Image (cartoon, rainbow, N blue to C red):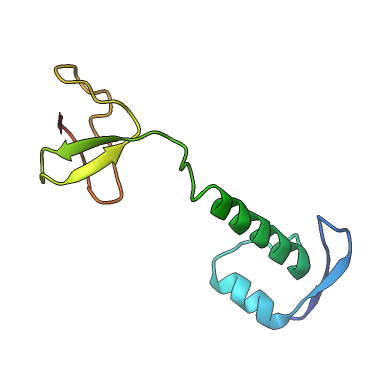
Length: 108
């Protein structure tokens, strides 16, 4: 398939921009099925806003309270977003975390 430059309209600023062959090849190699809807300037501005917002909040969901637990399978410490109670069946029996494949039984 032979690619050629395309003239597209930015959804955000409503200005025309050229999608180069190189940009199309990169876009296709990353698995995106559709052409970009925003021009490079608007994409950069959005990325900057998003990264600045994340820095202000010190990461995604940093305000959420977490509780310490010990995984009964591997014995490692972990943190969960729910308050585990001793003697009560845990509704999150197959919780997946970044550091553990599964936390099935929780020790306090």
